[in-house]
Length: 442
Image 1 (cartoon, rainbow, N blue to C red):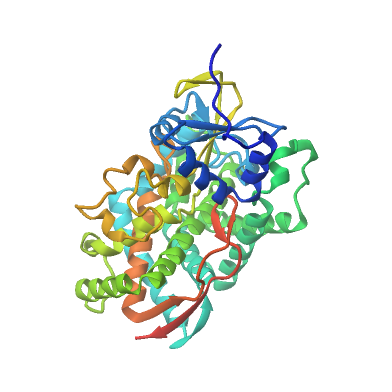
Image 2: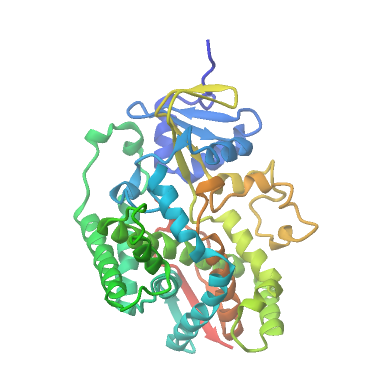
């Protein structure tokens, strides 16, 4: 008889399901730490709905994420609301969209995005007082929203629009936050969308519609991501409906800006925990930039800044959980899985696995240097996913975060006043509330 994955030893099935739903970050991290060396996969049966398998062996994570034939994205969470976007589509539609959009995220285009990031950071800093307190997450959200709108859509968003999307993303986070009931109740018995959820989607749809309308009104398709999609529609072999254009725009508005905003926010948090590293990052920025804003040619010189971003993504990855579903009965890691079973791979839990990382919960950017342990642990590091569906905007996000950190620290000291985060793990790893920070101009 084929072997199925083990359940966590000593825990009743229902207890495991409730623990996963009640505090998934703590549960997944604890399971990874306790059983990662014993079992490649741990199974959690939610009593209703598909069986959940938590992947503990990082090599199996990459096997699953690299195999689109056996394992695909399930229709879970808000991505199910937008079935035509790149982040949610699959099969031929995904391949078609990826081929059209990939050129927007390669070297030449990325170099041009550096100036856009610089403009947005300068505008943000010009709006800050010389000293005071502010919600850092709201500020980085506005910054990332402006960058994504300009780089991908050639569109200037107002601060009011940015704040509306930030509020919408918080509402979506609350709607899709993990809960104990969600792991044990069948879909038919779970509550439907709330009024706040509907209003959040309306705000996102309204901005997406404005962006698409503006791009379509231009005499020639703009040289941007949306322009590439609009132009691709002239090819009879490529099918892109009006709804697909809107879905694509809405997905990049939301996913494309929030993950970067969270990365920048958490980077400032970790630097507040390590002021010695913060001063070294500032010194690097002052030496490399000499008061100027970062340019593309400065990217490779900001080495410590890059390591800070990579370490931030190890400890607090915005995409904290990746889910796939078995498309047919499969064998994985010596186990048999039925069609429809879910597989969870947590970049957060793997990034803190003490069997892979030295001082796994400590913020140590130096581990990304030539003598650090990051090379040895590379399989346990996948903040942007892995395989053919890894994040298409990975390099844009890394570049924007790196430039923003160096640019801001040249001009301001930023001290995050939160000692420890109370996370709201939903689609992304959101804080449960504002991230208060004290700023002072240098």
